Image (cartoon, rainbow, N blue to C red; front, side):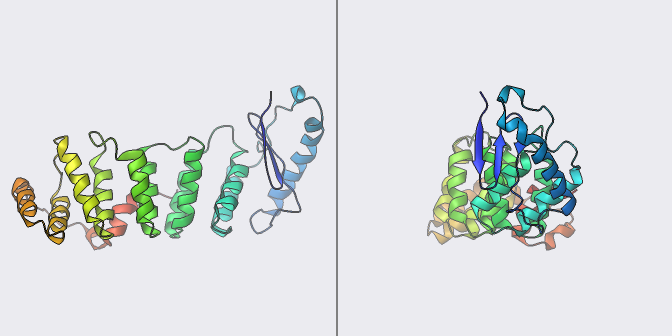
Length: 270
C-alpha cells in the first residue's frame, strides 16, 4: 500500500519521492527556468504511472538528474524569500526533500548557517522545527540551535518551554555548554528564579560549574532576588574558579555576548 499526502500544487508518494509541481503555482523567483523545465519533464513522464496500477510505479526518482547545486539554490532562495509562515516554509521544505533518497541533513545544516548570517531567526526556527517534526536532527546541537534562535527572535519563554520539554528533565547528563546557554538566556531575560532553580538542579547531581562566568551570573541573580546569603555561599563554594589564571584574552571577546554564546551552533556555511 502506498502512502500519499498532498499540499497545494504538489503530490507526494512516500518511498518513491514522486513530486508533482503545479506550473501555475511555480514562482520563477524561486525556481530557475532550467529547474522548472526539468520538473515539468518529470511530471509528464510520471503522470501515466500515477494513473495506472501503483504496483508499476517507475523506480526512477524525480530529482535524479537535477544537480545538487540547483537543489541547494532552490532551498536557500525559497526559505529566504518566502513569507515567514509555517505553512509556506513547511510546504517548500516538503517539496524539496521529496527529491532526496536520504534525508539531506548536511544541506539543511548549510542552509541554517546561511540563514544565520542573514539573521533570519524566525525562519531558522521554522526549519529546525520542521526537521524535528520529521524525526530528524534530534541532537543536542540542534536543540541548542533552536533555543539560541528563539532567544534572538525575542521568544525566551518559548526557549524555556522547549528546554523543559526536551532537555531540562535530564540534568545529570546535559552538557555544560547547553546549561551555560540556558543560564545566559535566563539572565538576559530577567528570568532569575528559573536561573537559580536550574543551577540548584545541577548541583543536586554534584555537577560543578566549569567557569566563573556561570557562578557570577548565579551570584548576581541571588543578589537581585534579595537572597544575599545564598550569593555569598555560592561565591565561597566556587572561589577556586576565581583564582585560576585567566590567560590571554581571545580576540573573540570583542564579539557581543549573545553572538558569542550562540554563534558556534550553526557551523560553517560551506
